[in-house]
Length: 394
Image (cartoon, rainbow, N blue to C red; front, top):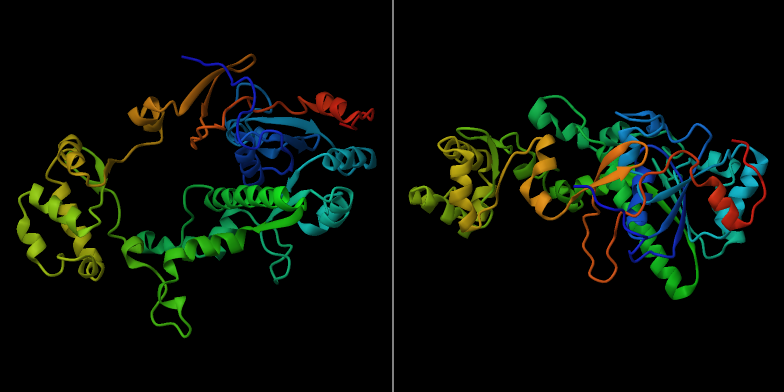
């Protein structure tokens, strides 16, 4: 059953204007997170539009599924920042904005009128956020960077060797999406600071540094000390033995973690003797025998069906899940019950499937109030709000 869009923004950032000059995933996803929280996001696109408009299945030109995933709750304005007149309009737009979020490398940003110093002089309260591959101060500063490059440099690709034997990328645009979350958080924090002091600031969120810190959260291990007192890498999560396991009719993930959960698991299956084995008896002991632990789990799980395991483990509060396909997610009973999926009628493209913002807030709930915009759909509207008579070159 289709539903109506929310009548307007209701999130905690309602009243905040964000100007987005970004494409692909990182910048657009960060801006969409702010838009979900109520911000008025004006997406400034070149005449040809965001590249992702042409990626993925589509029912109309410029509205590919890739673009739809990262651009709800936004307005689209077309400006050619290489054109002096359009650049002047852009400056006027940013003069009245609370946030500028862009993904242009510093030298080009200066040429296109996106540089921090001049924009901050004109609008001292501006939160100026640049998402980029690398911090400018280092030898990699100014390099081009996409997700694959950052997965490689940050060690993520090398971690896959425990399974594949060779470095492999994660089958998701992982670095962009994680960095987008950091960028949205940083912008929100800078807005809080501005609320307290009245001062804007420059915010730089580099992918390499962000993903290195993210990856080493657990994997820094023995190198948390200087000199190191052990190798890098947290074996319990990086071993090839850690994986979903086959059952009689599918695959499942199951993880007794605490000592009590392990005891309950082996009692349920009639194997109290296992916990008497000193290699399994305590958390510390299991950490020293990770492949053996996973091997025992793998053997036990093959003896029953998915449904049998669910019926056995769920009442005992032992973490357990069947392995969903991507298609399974559209009808997962929990996601259906929590109204995660929204089916909304588009006047041109028909019914669209959109995920709801996952965060729940009692007083200021995020909401979907705009479908992803068509290229330049709101140019005239936004220019009228600015009182600008200039007709963009596009």
